[in-house]
Length: 351
Ligand code: KG4
Ligand code: ZN
Image 1 (cartoon, rainbow, N blue to C red):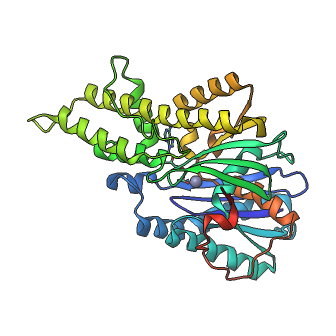
Image 2 (tube, rainbow, N blue to C red):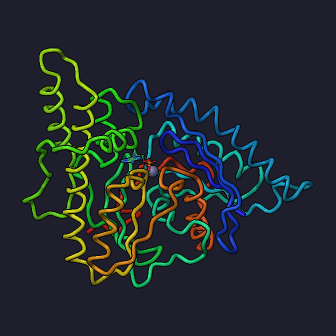
Image 3 (cartoon, protein in one colour):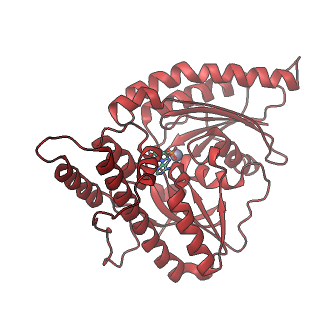
C-alpha cells in the first residue's frame, strides 16, 4: 500500500492506495475555501499554516483506518510514501513534503515525489489498474493554475500540445468572482450565477479567435468583464443581481467557446493519434464545459472519459494512483528531495 499526500494549493489531502490493483482504500481531505474567500483568492501564508494544522488531523484519521486493517502493526503493509512536490505554491508544497519525509524516515520507506499535473491525468484511472487509453489519450487539463492540452501515449510519453499564455481557465472564473465580490473559489459560484440568466448575452471577445496558434489566453476576456462591470455599475457604483448573472453567463459562454474553438483545432490536427479524450482538473466540474466537450467528442467519434466529480479538484487519491505507476518503475526520490523548480519539459515532452 502507498500513502499519498497532496498540499500543492489550498486542499490538504491524504489517501491510501493498494499497489496490486490500484484500488483506492481510503481518502480524506480538508479544504480551506472559507478562509480564503474574504480575499477572493488563495493567500499562500494562510494556506501553509492551515496545512500545518490539517495534515496531522488527516494522518490521525488514516492511522485509525490502518488500525482497522491491521490492529497490531498498522504501518506494516505500507510500501512507500508519495507526495506532490511540483508544481504548486512552495510554502504549501513544503508542508506536504515535511510530512512525507518524516513518514518515510520514521517508517524506513521509499519516497515518491510526484508531478501534480500528471496526478490530475491519473484521476481518470483511480480505482482501476488499467490506464485505459486505447491507442492514445487526448487530455484537457483545466485547473486554477493551468490550462493545457496534453497528449498521452503512455506513462513515459506525455506531450504538452498547448497551454495558456497567461491566466488559466479556472483562475479567470476566480478573478471574475473577485471583481463581482462573489467569493472564492469562483468557478462554482460564477457557474451558478450564470445558470440564473436566460436572456441575451453581452458581447465578449473570444480570445485568439483569428490566431492560428494552439494556445489559450484568458487575460483579455478578464479585462472585457472588468469593463462590463464598470458599465453595469453606472453612477451608483452598484450592480444588480440580474446584471451579475448576465455578466457571469456572458463570460462563461466566451471562456467555454475559447476552450472549444482550440480543442476543435486539436481534434482536427491530431485526431488520428487518439481514441479517448479525458477532461481533468478542478474546473472540469463545469457543466457547460462538460456538455460542450461531450458533443465535440461525439462529432469526432472519440470516447470521453471524466474523473468522478469528487476527484476533479485537488486530492491525494489521484496522487496515489499515479504513485502506483511510479512505484512499479522504482522512481524513488532521495529523502529531503527539494520542492522541485523543475521546468515542464522535464516531466512532459514539449512540442
Ligand atoms: O485542480 P484544482 O482543484 O486546483 C488547482 O490545481 O489549481 O482547481 C481549482 C480551480 C479553481 O480555479 C476553481 O475556481 C475552478 O477550479 N473550478 C471551476 C469550477 N469548479 C472549480 N471553474 C469553472 N467552473 C466550475 N464549476
Ligand atoms: Zn490541481
